[in-house]
Image (cartoon, rainbow, N blue to C red; front, side, top):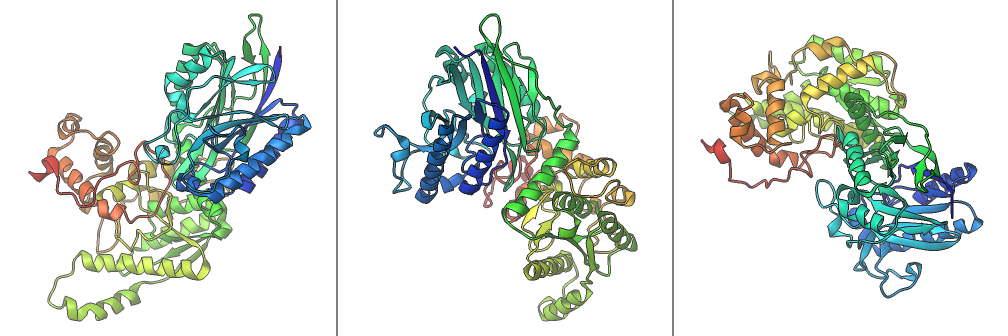
Length: 571
């Protein structure tokens, strides 16, 4: 019987679809595990193909390549070094003794989101994820088959109970493993970030430990995938719920743990490195940086171009971009109109100087004049209104897209969640862009993050020390500056009121009576509710962006565009 086990956990950042690259990451981690004397290397959920693969997993070519790399990884373990617990898609093998012989000839094969254990040049075993994620950004029931409730793997004399991500959020999987003789629990995960989730995971792990009376190790991946950010924060808890190891959030990390049997013959993890989770503002800011960095890097854009306004949204977006990919790959463009204030011109230029980025100023005055002349026959006899304002925004959007086309840089749009919620944005204007760092960040949080970044600098960012924007950008009243003396509050409630109401409507889906019970004015609530409903068609056409709240406006809140129901807002 084994009395000691060394387990290495690779908190990896795989890329969806880059099977060879992901396999090489696993091989590199296995070498580190071997150098550390580890018996077992654990990698995250679907680490071989990246997560979530969505409909990619229906492609026979992808499945064939994944199986080929699994066979290669299996062969690697014949050297007597560490075994590998790897996340990978696996076929239904009821009719096949060896799943690696299964040929994927059609996309109709039944596939599992699986944990695969390789050791000694052989397949020790595999199991499919039982509780498939079918909410928020995940749609696993569309592409994966539900795994059965199964017992533990036998690995070098130790019975290891393995679960996959969502399997920890319900008692059934872990209880089945414990009842079948598991001596420890190990979870491989692709768990997305949202504020406060790190605490939720540990509380759930404690629930499973108390039910099963077993130690539990939780490995999460890191990195950005489209609008998702995985935040790491992997941890190990002993059967007494004491924390014995914890990896940092957002960083790729290699964590080695030593396990010994105590006097009662039960496995205990010995104390290892423990890094406390980030506090909320730091975690949200780092999530935004990681999301932008990986979207740019994994999609191979050479850089980012941002339209600067002298306002807080573009200033914070520029800071995030510079922190993500460095000032030499970020280009900021000020596009003044006759309504642009001197303050905005000064603030935009000073912000770019603080960030050290290339700065251009391109007046949209000639474009405004050209459109005025071009549209004069159609608009004759009408009064100026939002049409002329939107022409300004669209002239800026056209300018940015032209620069993007010429240089290959991606346009980072700068609208925040408050504006996107109520439609305070111009289609094909300030909404132009390939990605949006602030899409899921309310305006009040934009202010808080800006103050935080002016006073703090995360260790992994590429931006400057010290302030990244002038204080005046944070303190002055926000304005679109599309007409004289304009402020956002000409069209919207104060942002603390607006954001509070929006959180009630979006994150909590509260009825009117419950929102009013929190002290909000009824006419204001009805107005915000109506703006939220009517702006759905704009949001459907917006760029993807980093998801940081529990309910974003893209895939979490799914309302029809054609929608006659207005509820109590019909009054």
